[in-house]
Amino acid sequence: MKLYTEVNSNAACWPEPLESVYQSLGNAPATEIAPKLPHLGVSDILFMSTVMSIPGAERPWGIVTWMSDVFRLSRPSLYGLSARVKQRLNNSDDVVEVATPLVSSYRLERTVLTAAFPGKMALRPMQEVLCEALEESRSVGWLSGLLNDAGDKAGEVLANIDTSPLGAVMVARDETFFQGTPILLVIDPVSTTILLTQACEDRQADTWGLALLQAQEQGVQIAGLVEDMARMYPKSQQEIGLDVAVQKDTWHIERDGSQVLRDLERSALRATKQVLTLEKKLAKAWDETFFVEKYIPAVVKEEQRYAQHA
Image 1 (cartoon, one colour):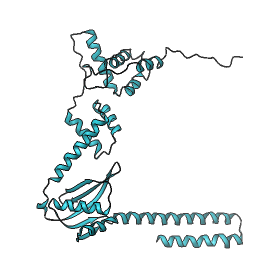
Image 2 (spheres, rainbow, N blue to C red):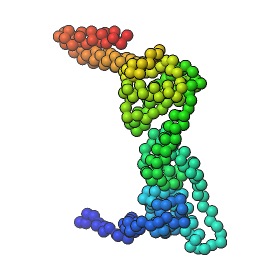
Image 3 (cartoon, helix red, strand yellow):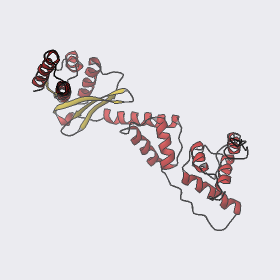
Image 4 (cartoon, rainbow, N blue to C red):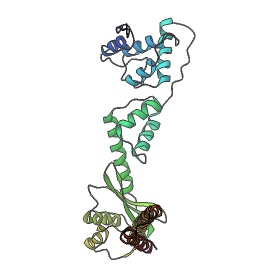
């Protein structure tokens, strides 16, 4: 009896031939057909246009998605490239209108900077976003250079601000992190003026002391500090001789206290669950020894847990 039918793989079926052709395309310089896509050569565009020219009903399922992935293009871009190639090959007088987004350099740079901060996006995901949203391709080096230049310009602007008109200020200080690097912040909470922002290797007491001195050099008079309960803060004041009033932020204490309260509540509920389990066992079959040695200590423990929670 024949149990199965053996089927030989047909080499003419997608994606084997297309993959072979794709691997043999090689590198080619950019072409005027797609000036905004410098990573595509003539062979790449002709290959994509050939596939996109196949009628949709006959085109292998999933091939457009495959090309979108390997060539780092959106699906609308694939259709647009195919339309432009057809127009040139047909040499038609009828102009084929292709919706190509016009992206200015300003918009491109602002998109990258917004993705970096406050978006906290890494460089590789930035490339994917630019390709999908703006149909633009940029190298990691270009993105890194843009971020470094923007950071230098922002630092120059902040360093040249004269904060002396603010007079005596009760400043707030804290740190945030960008890709693991601490960024020290000193601000005026009333006017929301950034008095200092500095990316540092650490956030130790001596580093914070220098940051406060730099803020004072720009003219601000620190009349007091609003800060959290970090242990290096008092030491940083001692190292620079800054004797001012300090208002501690109680958020961390309240957070830790809430965690302790939740832990006590869970402990009390577990004790209650244990008592209920023992009561079910006693309800099925009374055991005096079990009652004295197991049940009574469980009830005492439950009362203690609820007393701690209260």
